[in-house]
Length: 293
Ligand SMILES: [Zn+2]
Image 1: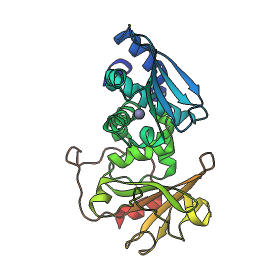
Image 2: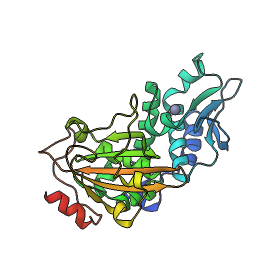
Image 3: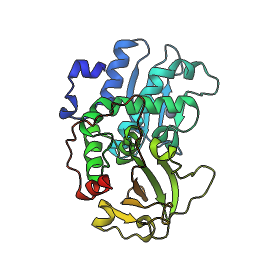
């Protein structure tokens, strides 16, 4: 809301949030004795980001990013560590369990897994980089976007495709899931609230989930159709049919599979307006067909 007020509601037309500059300038103005001095890239074995502080008070802070992250993932990592600075720095400074700072792994930063403070920093980052008021103006909560639409949003917000999919899953009123896999096994999965409430989800924490043998992520047949959507019959992923969209990330050696399910009756968020907002994106014919079913 502060950024909207200062930079205008159309601020994303000029590019994503410059989170590195924001973290340094905001902390210098609001906590001049204990600011974030710099954002640096280093080897961080097992971690993707850290918020570290100087040995002696008044503490000087620094954000460390694991070297080699894509620009989108790096932005989200900085926003997550900035979230720890804004929300948790006193706890981190005083807590005996933090030795010189807080170190966050991929699950902490990109999916908010772990202690509550990780979920809070993850939400801070998502709210800062991908505010719902902007997303809502671009995409109806009932739209079933494909990777092209989601990729456009990822560019707009300067984040990874995965980050924008997770944000969209929080926002959508449709039933959908994302599955990130490697060599045919789910690394992790996340369902929209509507899908979860209808009993459609994939549990990956306690179980090893093997993807269906027909799934593109397993066959490796990454055709254009596999990216825009293949209708899989009931019995493949779930007892009901799904529209499966899959792309592969060579950089991270993973497949991202998006599963769209048909609506099964009205579902409403308590805090969402029911009417659709204007959809600025052109939906695919396939999505339209699915909408009508
Ligand atoms: Zn963290």
